Length: 243
Image 1 (cartoon, rainbow, N blue to C red):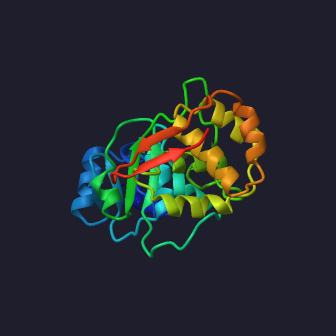
Image 2: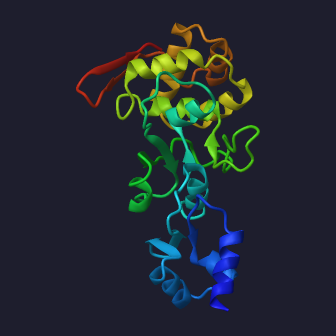
Image 3: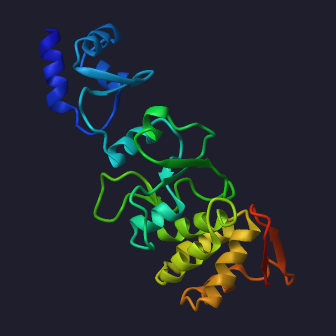
């Protein structure tokens, strides 16, 4: 009976992804039996209530799909999301995956040991923005983890300028983001809580001659006022943006 259960698990559970006790219980595998499978070398315990097949190699996307069931709002964000949509500069061999979510959590050690990553819990938008707005699977990839749309990813990246994101790299990436959906960008800008992000989007957009910036500025209107904006950077420098 026990051998039949592990054989069923091997044939029905996708490889390259972790699984939890809920998946085991759905196949009538108790915690005690899972422990026996770990001892006998069928399974490897990654963390509390999380397993993988012994000798399997976890893949990033299905592993993120699993974590999305455990971390509210988890998604590929900022520069990493723009890269997924084809907006990128030269990337290092092992790119750090930028992840955002709604809850202040620490990524599991078993995940960060396998995938260079950085997680932030940020409330960039106000509470009236519809839940999940600007988050979707990649076009043509319905089984991908949630990824910020280009419009949302751009604003996420701009929020990290001077913190985790270098200015020149951000401008270089933004220069390539020439095609955005104005209606979605307008919605995100009008729900954005950070003046810095709105100013960077509009001022850099104008300096770079991006085709969507005129409508974006019209959408924001007089919300930002007429004074210049000064922000101290993490490295001690100063970022000054005109009205």
